[in-house]
Length: 116
Image (tube, rainbow, N blue to C red; front, top):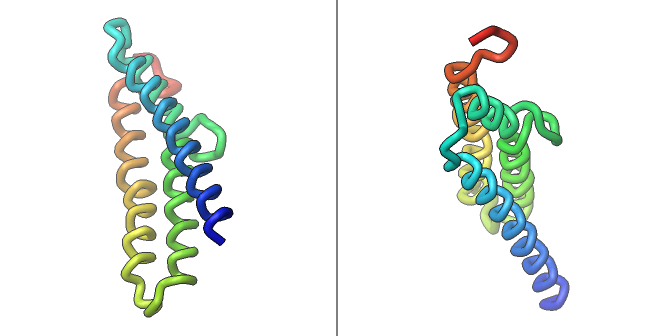
C-alpha cells in the first residue's frame, strides 16, 4: 500500500510544481514595466473568467478544495467536520471573495466591452 500512495503523492507534488512554475511565469509577466491597465485587466480576467475550465483558474482551485473536502468528509475519524469544514470554507472564500474581488479589480482597471 505504500507504493501506490507514494506514487500518488509524487504525482501531486509534480503537478503542484508545474502549477507553481506557471504561476511564477504569470508573476514574472506582471513585473514587466510595459504592463498597462488594459493588459493587467486582461491578465486578471484570464485567471477568473476566460480560461478553461469554465470559471477560470480560481474556480479550478476552489473545485479542487471542494473535492478534497468531500473526501475528508468520508475519512474523518469522528465525522465532525474538523477537516472538511475548513476546506469547504476555503473553497467558498476563493469563489465568493477572491474571485469577485479579482473581477472588480479587472473592471476598475479596464471595463470590458467599454471604451476606457
